[in-house]
Image 1 (tube, rainbow, N blue to C red):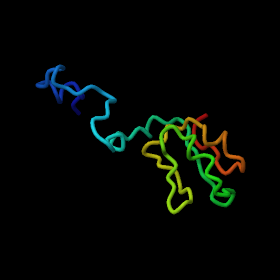
Image 2: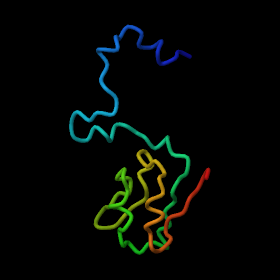
Image 3: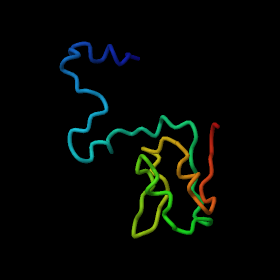
Length: 99
């Protein structure tokens, strides 16, 4: 298996784009950062009262709202910060995985 440095040896560092810069709308969707997560929030729709308190607090916009109701997490972008868990007044979010 080749290392990342070996695959692109012909590209000079000056020709590479700067990391973490957004060049046009929607490009952050292409950067799937969910694999950084060490803990996974789990949503319990039975406990959820659809107050939507969690959605504006999510720094990664990983709690989709469809038709005025929240849906399950966007795990491609959720980094497991836990803010949603702390602001949920109905304990409808819990941790799974490493802690």
